[in-house]
Image (cartoon, rainbow, N blue to C red; front, side, top):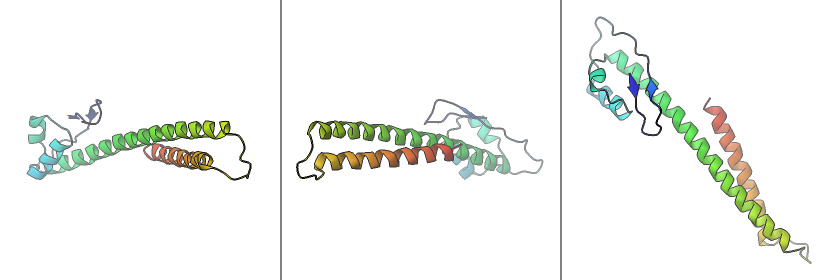
Amino acid sequence: MSSEQKSSDTPVTIDVPPKEPFEGKATQKQKQLIWELGVRDEAAIAGLGKKQASIVIQQLKAAHHQVASGRSAKSLFRWAGISALLMLGSCAVFATRGPDPYGKMDGWGAFSLVFFLVTALLLILALLRKLGSK
């Protein structure tokens, strides 16, 4: 049985154990959930038993969770890159302004510092998310 995921073009292959001799049919709720998780083979869904449907649902949810974790890590890396570019731009402006005669940090220096901290935080979160999804 394979699932066409909406979030990625890679189909997921699921190993379904054979149906037990006295296993009842899958409930309508189970069938509907399997359909919502991306399986489009109506004949395969109709022939599932309750236990088989439960296994399929667990495996599909695990596959979807793994895909979602990868996407959120990519998103965090993207935002970290944007933040890093803003930080570099504000540092360039801060560097071209020359030293402050009063020794205080002006708005551009504070701006650079904030984007440095945001970039570091986003990179840490992205790396943790990436390591957690493996």
